[in-house]
Image 1 (tube, one colour):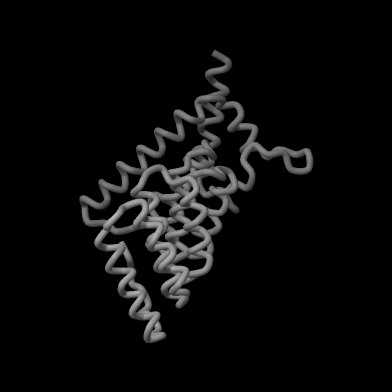
Image 2: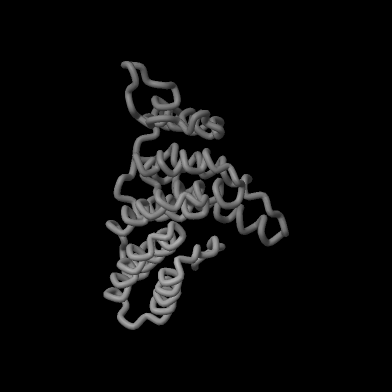
Length: 225
């Protein structure tokens, strides 16, 4: 009974703290020998944290689709829920990736979004969703060199040939925009090893070959999906 009250109080304390300044730096990590009150409350939840994180994630998804069905377009509405998910479970990769995407693409809060993705990657170094979303956001922000490097990092943990092609295609177009045509064509050849005879890749390579011959500057990409 006493343990039940402790869990109840801990849950209330967690749910009251939805805004979490500075993204709750270093969950469960000791800093200077002092632990925050939120960390202690989270510890009291024990393995219940994972269940709560999944429950809040589901709630955020239901809330998003309910708003969408009623014509509301407020991408910031679910952010407090996503913050709570990663606070409860720092290994919840999808929540980091989705929150970063919303901040960068939908809300144009670029620094905050990239900071969150970097934090998620620090806590989940081999996460495919976070590595990919980070690369895609860098591409969206026209940081071509960083996007190419991030695509390489995502490729290392790609889960199937679709992931591999997406990573290489993002790198291909980043290099094309940087006018590094030979490097882009090299990526194209690697794409053909994954999908021999792929028509989209062949067309993209032909376009780069033409740009290389004329030394023309490629148009700024508006999207490559």
